[in-house]
Length: 214
Image (cartoon, rainbow, N blue to C red; front, side):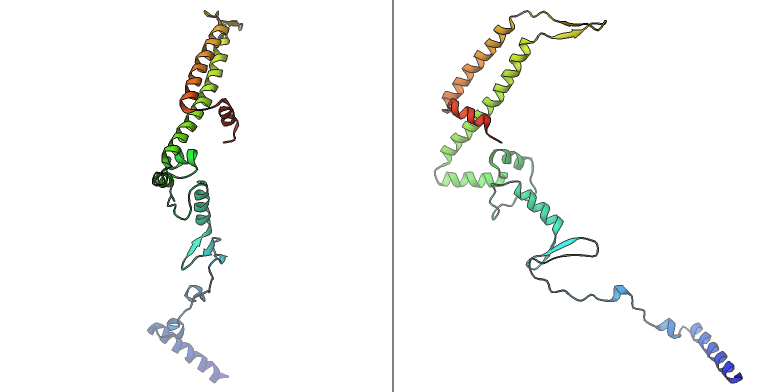
């Protein structure tokens, strides 16, 4: 029993000497962390999707991977220009001019330029330009007609004001409201007929344009 205690003390003394010398097994042992463990490569096929440890969803493309959130946002943005030819459209960052062209053509500025160039080569640009002017004239007439109706309503309604005692009084109009409204309407009808004649627009076309869903 005494020998065993002596051996244990000798081992402890040796361990202390080794630690002081920096040669103890716990000091020289290589520690392997989880970060040092290389994860096995996953063989993914084109179209495969997966979610990483941070919750991001990825999709395997041909030779590269793409984060689904970014891809979906870009695709949605491109789909907002429905008439662009997706196989050649390069508009990935639409600007003000692109959105303006979308309102008229449903496509970005570059695609409009390409489309008009092709029409010129095919000899169809003149007809296209005439129809474009006609559509602009119809839109102007539609907006102007609405403004005329608002103006006619305004001139027929006498302005009101509230006195200090809370009474509501109306200003006396210095003109005949019915006559003024009729005069405004007549003037607009003359302009409307001129536009109809210049752009060869029929009343039926104008009505259909006003009622179509934009």
